[in-house]
Image (cartoon, rainbow, N blue to C red):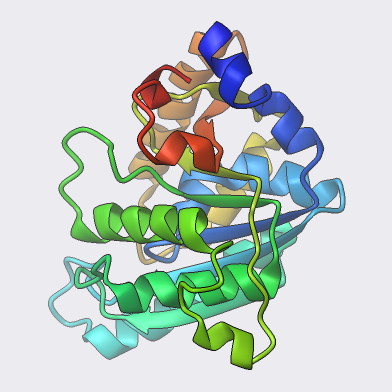
Length: 250
């Protein structure tokens, strides 16, 4: 596509060159579900992947006997195990209450500081523009991460970072999962078993029938791309995220 060639290189080149990823997820389990195959591939190639979990996941149950605090601790343990399975050892927790995340300057600036500290090539998160997305945390976290990605190279945004030695950093790309208009499909056929071992580590969240439903979902994505199983992403650079009427077409 001519528009794409004017604004950014091919998405596959982005992943080939990636050496460090910052994955910012609304809840424990979001990265495994949306991008566990990609994360496993990148980690196996030697890329360093850092997880940032924004909320504590304390709402994710229908069990009336389970307290918020007990569930939050359970979900932290499950996330650690899932990350271990995928080869991820560095996890950062921001501790916001589940369902209460907001795309505030505070959250945006926290993510900017993390971008400057970690200096990733690629930022991974949920797509806040997903049609019919009713979960506030997904919308708000996606927006906050998008704004942080756009602004983290500007020294006068969150300028206090300079006093702590954190220099501005421009991550090359952002990749959105759970996206309506993907521009890149990753073949995860060889990584499905590992991805689903990691998803299954979130025992408080997923029954066997739910896991089977997700398997079918990634099979359908694979059919779109000519693979057995696939994950879908919208990969953009910062040019696409400000005053760009072609962004949906990229």
